[in-house]
Image (cartoon, rainbow over all chains, first blue to last red; front, side):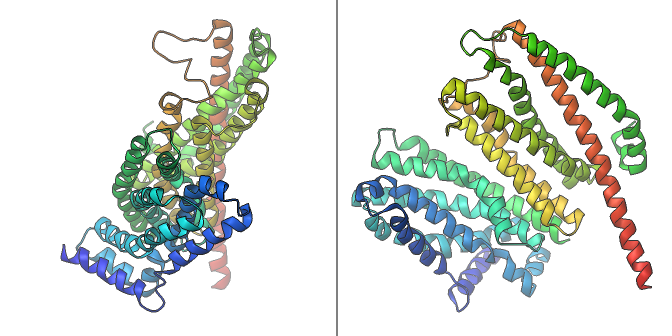
Length: 222
Length: 243
């Protein structure tokens, strides 16, 4: 397991240092959420109703934006080749990178969610639940995005292609994430079923993501 | 002839050239027969003549899912068995599948207006088919952006297998959620719920659409093989010019 944690620590260190851009996702999230009331008008009742959806969309876009860098820099400086030749299974190495990516991009985002919720007039009581759904759902976004990142680095293409590939696959996560958040805030549907499905989506992509990403890298970079 | 024999593109092309005219003729005949039967089928007591949209909508919907199924098998063939024709089959099926999905969405929308009172609702069946369409477009985008055909087809194969998760969601969406779209009525426990006067034309049309799919698919595979040959010849020519 030392190699696994070594990769996690290395990736986190790289993203925190100069040029890593770990907090860029959280900053982007803040800007997107700030722009929503300008587009929709500062109607507090409306914002309270669609607040969870805005937070989820912002989180989805922010996590998508950071995916580009997941393999690209490692591919440029050759460390990706070392990972592929290493003794550790590529699936595990890729999973370690995804975990580091989640810790540095998704976690700050979840931490600032309650503050942004205040701006959107979401009740304080409900803020914890929205943050909880993000905590349960963002791993799915990261691990599904992992597949897209691997495919786009194998084709040496990024940017919009990555978004086109990844976004359709994240639709179920968005549906159940927003459903769970809304159920907790306005009801009347129970919170349990959508939330457990959200957890199931995260767990399933935790398995599917690394396997598919490793296959994409192996077949693409050979 | 075993599947492995078809790995030789020349042998495959001879087979296609022999089969394709017959397949095309059968498609035309079955379409003529099916359309005539569909035109003479009785109107629905509630929906009137609009029920005839079903004869296009339902086969297109089935084939949109079969197209992805075929691409998934081809993807396994590319990644696991490395069959040389598998990536050609997968690449040729993608635009055809996307077209059938588009037909399904458009006819469904036109059918929804008179019967449901709206062109579009965000229910589970409609949304999951829309996602299927987006996935098709994603695979096509992958093929468009890849410089090297082999690399592109392997990437598309991985994406196809990941996207295959959506197929059971489409199939069972009408059972899992309470949707505006009706649940399955053709194949179900206790026999079909569709009257024979409508069921038979529908099945004939489904057969005609399936033949159309395979006619287009074989022709597209042939074109893809020829396109790759042209590409290879161009590369050789460019090398000769340089040397």
